[in-house]
Amino acid sequence: RSPWLYCQKGLSMTVEADPANMFNWTTEEVETCDKGALCQETILIIKAGTETAILATKGCIPEGEEAITIVQHSSPPGLIVTSYSNYCEDSFCNDKDSLSQFWEFSETTASTVSTTLHCPTCVALGTCFSAPSLPCPNGTTRCYQGKLEITGGGIESSVEVKGCTAMIGCRLMSGILAVGPMFVREACPHQLLTQPRKTENEFLEVLFQ
View 1 (cartoon, helix red, strand yellow):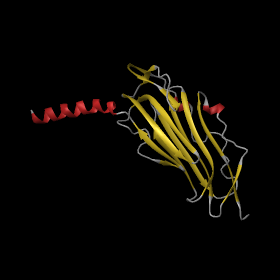
View 2 (cartoon, helix red, strand yellow; view 1 turned 60 degrees about the horizontal axis):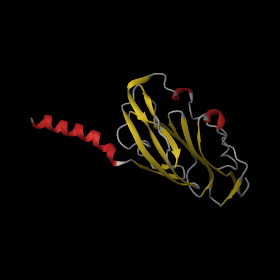
View 3 (cartoon, helix red, strand yellow; view 1 turned 60 degrees about the vertical axis):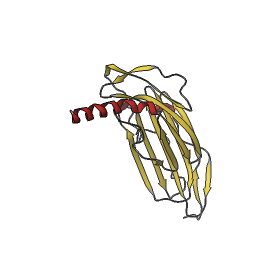
View 4 (cartoon, helix red, strand yellow; view 1 turned 120 degrees about the vertical axis):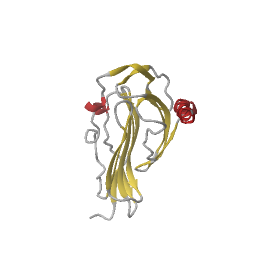
């Protein structure tokens, strides 16, 4: 085995309407790693409505264990967040070219929508300039609004996300803060906390009646 480790190197931050066919994760660039390093490829996929934000990085990583990690942070119906990361120790082993192996596109389109719940829906690098109010898929119960601040792996970006969900609170990432070399900080505006509080007060009133 060669004393040097060579890894594919690349960065991609994009919002796609059809990532299954349009997003190409190959790169021509190569990075020579320091001794003891691994190759990594990591991707974070955030789908809201018809748009999908993709943040992807490939390159050397100074330390870690060989592993493939796939996490579905937020599941359908509604907003979907999935991450994939691969740490591997052979030259050019971080050569995945498409999303198809870990992203089921067919499952992500909801066939039935609720007539009552509509939410502003968008995903954008930076800020959403428009967030049309769209009917929510059946099974969702509330509107989510938040920002993911992403740093590391060569990426420094924030992603604004709005849409329908069944999860409670500011947990689009299901509490996971590290995705490969990327750190993700999730922030939601405080006014979203007002609704659950009301139900807590009602619950207290029932207790003390």
